[in-house]
Length: 161
Image 1 (tube, rainbow, N blue to C red):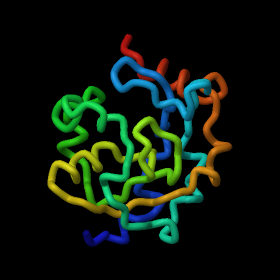
Image 2: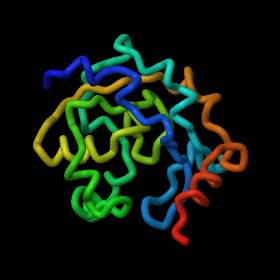
Image 3: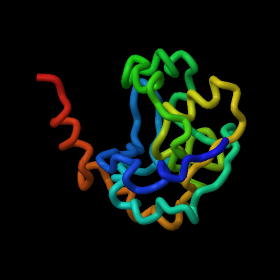
Image 4: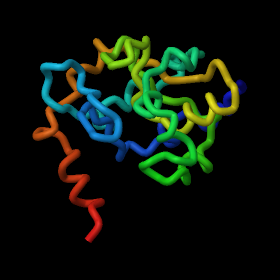
């Protein structure tokens, strides 16, 4: 798939995004290991790794993402957006992946950003896509215990009143 290089820069991404490594009733246990605490990755902490040098073509079936466990919670049935973000996502924008990042599906990549894009590409029958690929070893120090991270504060900020 051709990539519009004007979209492949740090201004494309909102770094107010977090990747939770947690247990939920919706998606199961996505901690980094069974004996680990819940952790969170703030994408602001890895923004220097989002470079054209790390842009790769990846096979979509090698990506672990939370909605892969239950097709009924994907696409138009996405529990985070009721399908709105899925409908409006731009699949030409590369996703962000962690290579060799621990995941319960045992896949090569753990998705850090772009779940709606991956879902849509799969639903469109695509087999490959462009992604920024970052080695787990290079960023594992940025996965902070939730009590040290910003996730709880963010949940309070977005909680309904």
